[in-house]
Image (cartoon, rainbow, N blue to C red; front, top):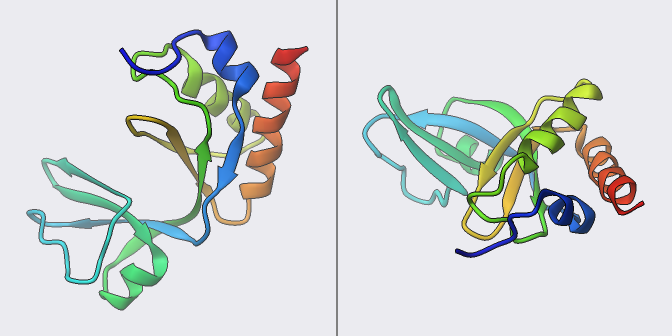
Length: 134
C-alpha cells in the first residue's frame, strides 16, 4: 500500500499548492472529448462523462460548463485508504462557508474551490497543519 494512512501525520504535514488557471466542470456524452482538450479529470457517470478542465479550453471547445474554480493540490502523499483526511479539510472549509469538490489521485488529493476563495482555502489548510502540529 502506498501513501500515509495516519490522520494526524497527514494533517501535521499537509501543505497546499495553488495550480495556475481557472478550472470548470463540464459534461459530455459518451466520452466524446473534443480535440484540443486535456482534462485534469474524466469520470464516467450514467448520464454522461464529467470533465474538469481549464475554463479557456471549455470556452474554446464551445462546452457548456459550471463552477469556475481554482485547483489546490495537497502536497502530502495520502493513501487511497486514509480515513478522515478529506472530511477534516472539507469540514474546516465548510465552517468558513466554502464548498469544495475534492478529487483523489494516486499520489495526492486535489481541491476545487470557488474562484476567488482560493486564498481563504489556502489559509484554512495552513492553519490546520499549524494547529495539529501544536
